[in-house]
Length: 563
Image 1: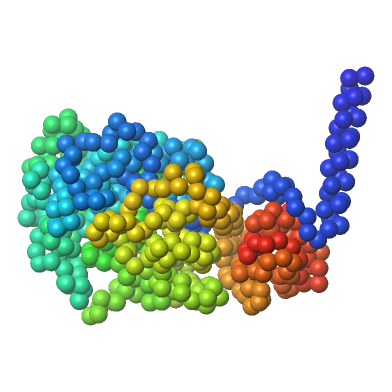
Image 2: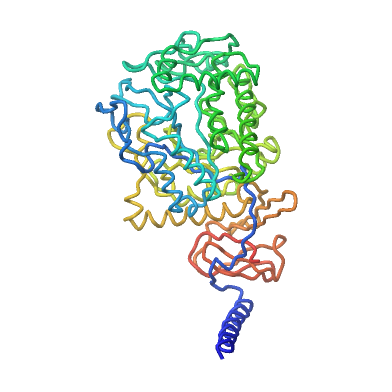
C-alpha cells in the first residue's frame, strides 16, 4: 500500500510538470524560474572576463585586530590613511556570494606586500601606503592587509567559487623615503631626474614623481642586497631562507643579480606558493619593455610549476594572464603605444591585454558605435589579444559619470562592450566619487558603501541591474569575447557569437527598449520555433516569423537559448 501511494504521488507530480510544460510551449511568453535553464559547462575566457577591482584597504574590514601596525597612527589628509579593509574582508564577501551574484569571475585587488612604515606629506597632509603601491619589502605581506595564510585562504576560496585572482604588482619603484624608511642603495634606484613624459627616454629612465625612487631596470650589473633589507630579514628570522631561495633562483635561471631580477623572483614566488592566476602590472610604460617579457617568462613558469604540483586545484588549461597599465593607452591605437619619438608594442612583450583608457570617452557615443568599433578592432588590429575596459578607477580623475547620474547606462556600456570589463568597487552601488575636502585621487577611494546598499532602495535597484547584466555576461563568453552584429536599429537589438573548438555560445541583447509590448528581431540568428529565455525578466519566449515578443516595462532584454 505504501509503495502504491508513493507511485500515485510521483505520477501526480509528473503529470503536473508535464501540463505546465505543455502550457508554456503554447505561449510565446511565459514567466518561468531561471533554474529551469539547463546548466552547461561554460569555459572561462580572459578576453571576456568580468573583473572586479578593489582597494584592499577600502573594501571590507574582515579583521579589526590588524587595523594599526608600525605605529601608523599620525593624523592624515582626508582618505589618506588606513581604514581597515583587508584580505579577510575580501574572502568574507566571496563566501557570502557577493561576487558570484554580481557575475564576477576574477578579482583584482591592490598590492598587499609590506608598505613603507612612515607617512609622506606632499602638500596633501600625511599619507600612508594604504593603497599598496609604496613597497618596502616585496617578500612580506603588510600586516594591515593580512598574513600569507590569509592570502592563501582567499585564493583557495576564490578558486572554489570559480573566481580567478589577479595580483597587482609594482616593479617600477620602491616606496617613498620617510623618517622611518631609508632610501634604497644607489645601485638599485634612480632618484632623479623626474619624468617629463615627452619622450621614451624621459618616461622610462627617470623617477615617476618626486620622492618615489625608480628601480634601475636597464642594467645587468650585479648588485648586493640592501643592508636594511638583510637586517630586517635577520630580525624576522628568515635571512637564511631568503638567501637560499635567491641562490636557487639565480642558479636555475642564469640571470645576473641585477635589481629587476631580484624583484621578478620575489613577485613570482606568490604564484609558486598560491597559484595566483594573473598579474595586473602597474606603471608599465615607465619600465623598459624587455623587463616585462622577463617577468612573464618567470610568471608563466611559476604558474605551470604550481599546476603540476597541485593537479587537483587546477581550474582549467588557461595560461598565466598578464594585463598592463600603460597609462593613456587606448584601443584606438591598436597594438602600439606612441611615446612621441618611439612606438612600443607591449603585446609582444609579455602582455596579453592592456587596460583601455578609451572607453570613458567612447561612452559618450551611442551603443552601436561603441560596440561595432570595439568588435572591429578586437578582430583586426588586436586579433588574439585583449583589452580591459573601465569607466572608473582609483587614479583617473576624469571618469565617466563622475557624479553617478547614469549608473544604469554605465552598467550597459561597461558590461556589454566587447573586451574584458573592469568593475571598480562601488560602480555597482553608485559609490560616490566626489568626496568633500579631499585632494587628488583620494576622492575616488572612499570606503565601500555597504550601508547604502543595505538601506537605500534606489541603490539596491542599481545593484540588481548590475547583478543581472554581470551574471548574464559571466554565463556567456560571447558577450565579452564574441563577435558583435546589429540585428535591429529600432528597437536596438544585437547578437553576440562565440565559437571555439566544440563550444558555441549565441545570445541576443536589446537595449533602450520601449515600455509595454515590443517585438525584437532575431531573424537570421534564431530560427522560427526556437525556444528562448529572457534572463532579465525571467520569461520564456518562442521565435515566430523571425521575432520574439515581450510585454514588460524593462528597457533591457538578455536573450539566450532555452535548452
